Length: 400
Ligand code: DI6
Ligand code: FE
Image 1 (cartoon, protein in one colour):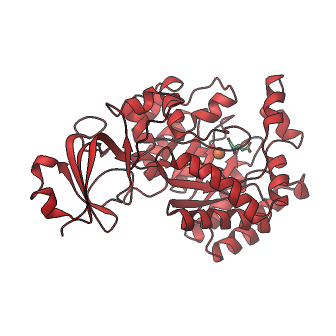
Image 2 (tube, helix red, strand yellow):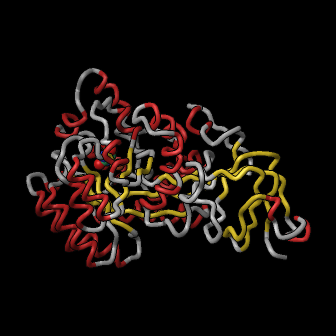
Image 3 (cartoon, helix red, strand yellow):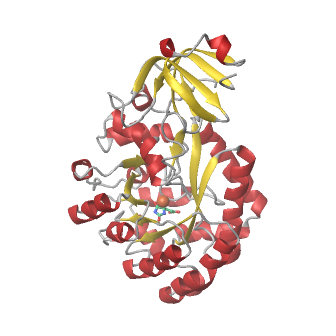
């Protein structure tokens, strides 16, 4: 048989860049799957034979829509505890930066995560990942960064590895040792950065636990110079880099990421034109995180028009984390990308499919419905793909 599975009676939003409309719509489509990859996609009328002659497993989609499996390309899903108390404090007027400077914030999650067992972390993260999977998310990025010592960073990265292997999802495991300064290194940021460069990162890489390297480049995080040291080591190890950049202030972090052929620069509310140009020249993807923008009640919008003008691909992610974006809905982020950042529905949906794949360097593997790509098919009870951005607090995912 030509296909292991053949889907008929579906409408496809391929999200391929060569589509006539922004969604790459094929009405009355058929999709042939072989060896877990798409081997044929097009109008059903053009199938090379009668469905029953092409596959023993013909599935009738009942007129539903299919999109590429969604991709959440920036998450901090693995941690213990929560930060609801800080949420209350912030509502009373204390800022995120003030909480961080007082030793709360990220460091309070570090404390809880250090105290948790690997199994406790696994169980907590599993529930979060399953919630996202119910919305059609099939590919995840998962960051470490709540350990800030070798044992706990390893524990987090091992959980990411186990989730990948147990759930059959695609995962990029990102080392975020430069997330905050651990209490053991107060006043010695450079010494901590040296420890990352000379010990923690090479050790965890040697253990095959790291797929990419990230950092928090911010006045309450690490400087550009410190991040560059880490990027040099990452590059020497052959690991791609990305950066939390320009979230709360402009540190020219995106430019640094671009200089190191970064996969992405993330948040980027305070990005300027020079940074946008550098990203465009390097092919670095802009990852927009409307959940953190909303939850911190930020005012400064990312430079969407400049990103469009210089054709920088824009991805959208949950940034799920206990401090600034405790959301478990990538669909809600689609709506927020439109309402808060004024993205069009086409741009937003590309942001969790084609462009999110790019943000992970997975553009040849997933993110669009095209022959040769993974058969990550998400089925939806909708009447048009724009509906995925229109509803909020709803989940129109159909049973696959
Ligand atoms: N920026 C963020 O939005 C998250 N990390 C980062 O560098 C916040 C992480 C946290 O507050 O726990
Ligand atoms: Fe983040």
